[in-house]
Length: 153
Image 1 (tube, one colour):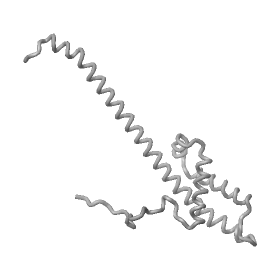
Image 2 (tube, helix red, strand yellow; image 1 turned 180 degrees about the vertical axis):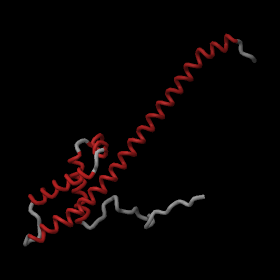
Image 3 (cartoon, one colour; image 1 turned 135 degrees about the vertical axis):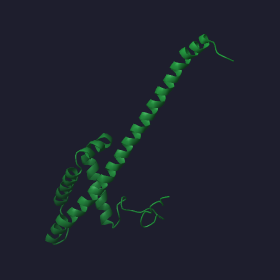
Image 4 (cartoon, helix red, strand yellow; image 1 turned 45 degrees about the vertical axis):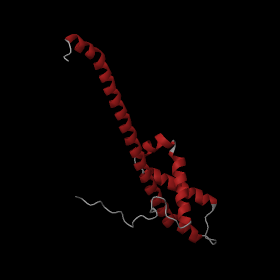
């Protein structure tokens, strides 16, 4: 059952390139998987930060600017121009608070950020007017009030 030196040489000539190709394929597939997973994780984190910044900016402007403007009017409502100006101010505040890296991550997926931020602001305003919590603040049905930590063993 011993292989002759010629058989070993033939096996190495044929088998070694196949094993090498398989190894290269496995490493490439692993690298692609890890890169995609890392990119998706960064995008998810960027969206969470964007949601938090939008919520805080909308609440801040609602408390400082909108309430004062509404009190100054007899009917207690904003004009269309005032609403547009406040929205523009909100977009500028959100963009300034995002930092340098987050806009780049978000732009790769969504394109120009103005539309994305504007839509997030409108959705947050809608939720606040309806008395709802934003999706980031909601707790799934049946979920505990506070997340439980896993027991350390």
